[in-house]
Length: 209
Image (cartoon, rainbow, N blue to C red; front, top):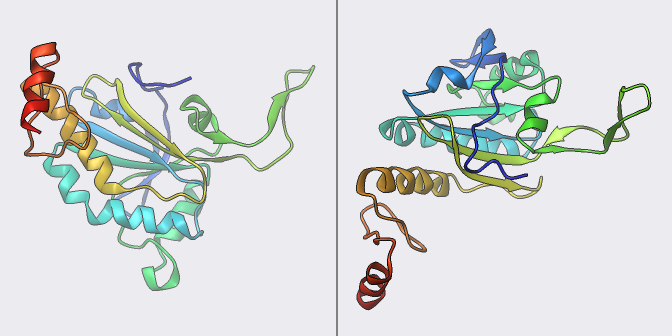
């Protein structure tokens, strides 16, 4: 089930913040009414596509912050695994220098509630969880507004890395709509025209483009 238009699932979990500090009760609720959030999942620490994505978000972190948007990552690894990966340099395949929070979804409930948990699992007749394969998160990404509502979601399979500039574009599009009251047509980018959501608006837009 898509989460777009719904409240983002609430959680409290351990996380690594500022690159080296482990906290016990990290929650997205701290941003309610204060910041937009890009909340993204990745499959595993110490892998190959994942560090390229984490570094790409770090390289654009100032762009997100300029848009009053927090970036938060999450995988099903432990907080100790996150911390260990954060101690390795980029040259060693690590992510030392990543400063945004990385949440530890060790019990898999965050990934499950956001609809990105990959793997074969079920509950048996004793109501026990049974998994017949590894349980890790797909590359899910969620844009959450100031009210805690999911406005955009994207879920990629494991081999398919995401485009961080597209995540920025979606933040721009949401904020443009909120500020201008106009919708964003195909391939819209910051600085381009929006359009009024009526027949006259679309006619005027198509006439100019």
